[in-house]
Amino acid sequence: MPPEIVGAKMEPGRLYDSVNILLSLYKNGGLAAWEPVTAPKWLEMFNPTEFFANTIVEHEVSVSLFFTMAGASVFFRVSVSLFFTMAGGMYVECTASAIQALVLFKKLYLGHRKNEIHNCITNVVRFIEDKQMPDGSWYGSWGICFTYVTWFALGGLAAAGKTNKNCLAIRRGVEFLLKSQRDDGGWGESYASCPNEKYIPLEGNRSNLVQTAWALMGLLHSRQAERDPTPLHKAAKLLINSPMEDGDFPQQEITGSFMKNCMLHYATYRNTFPLWALAEYMQNCISLSSVGEKLK
Image 1 (spheres, helix red, strand yellow):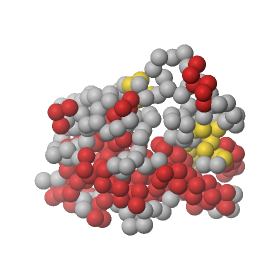
Image 2: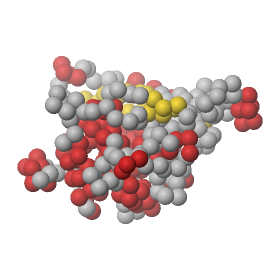
Image 3: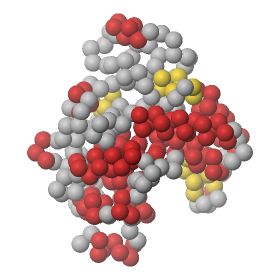
């Protein structure tokens, strides 16, 4: 896209600085927020809050980093996710985002700390694989819940070169999403998944459009379109037919979460994620010429 629309290209030096921050915080599979992790976990017993978990001592966290490439210009947005972790480890969702950013950076700026970036990606991929649940999902910290973070995990693994053929974690993640898909093509997960730390579907076999968008993008990351695109078409059809007369998507159940027990309402999610998922679906699943036939 031309600079007059998206702005001037960012200087490479600023990108180097951002990546240097990531690598400086990375250590032994985790990144500290402000200082090395030294305080014992038993200090969490003095947590004065009634519903926030793991907020007292410094834990390992992950730092997320996003690239957007448009034509000859590369735009870099650093989002340092300096949050307290849950269960004493990094966030899968932030770690997966960091993988995608570092992989793209390595392609565009091959000479900058190549070996260190490679080692970092290799180790955090291992972390994501190790955090997978027995049912093939991943536990989410900032969205509800297993559906949310399985989208991130599949995206991070795919960016690192993992595929359905060479990665058991991707195959299991895909299996989880396909098994939890509703008859109407959507996905619906209850907020109760967060405090109970197990997948709990919405009552009444309902689908949630935001969660449907997350699952659709997760399957797209895994190249489900190359195996059987039918689940993707069903999900896209549900999203396409869901806007109200004014074009707005309906507000449904809360989809954000914080520290296991606090549910968060993000008003723009209902539009942002369905539109994002449909754009990814159009780009990665079908051509414009065939959209009508696929959605009949």
